[in-house]
Length: 154
Image (cartoon, rainbow, N blue to C red; front, top):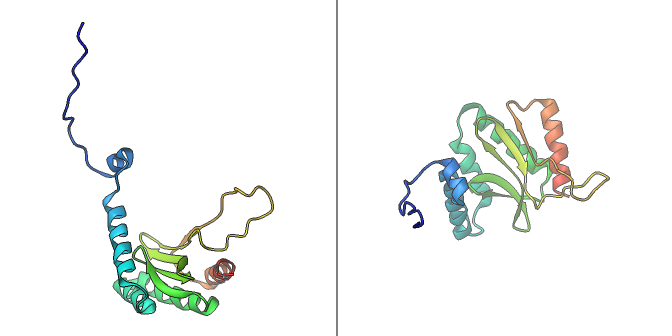
């Protein structure tokens, strides 16, 4: 009995799920990587100008939230330097992004792995909170974000 001949040219599949299964990158991931390469090539130019330009691209409520968040981060952690990171407004120490934000469906604020994540007592490999989303920046949200930034920037 001869071995069964397999199709040498299976049909190509496209889309996010296929990219993930095949080990490839989605269009969004490729765009973020290209943006990161542009950032690295630009070097240490005007980081604040780049952040403000990214904020200016936003519209409506997202822009208002981003402007307030920018002021909050700069006031809470003046030692962090504004810059872009994978196309998002970010704030860095020693060249490493500590926190960032982006506007997708919601405004999302996040911490990078370079942020000071103080672990609660227990095992050293706990899950840690690293991103939060919000739709408005009221007083309670500002207080929580201020505390997070202060802790992350230590």
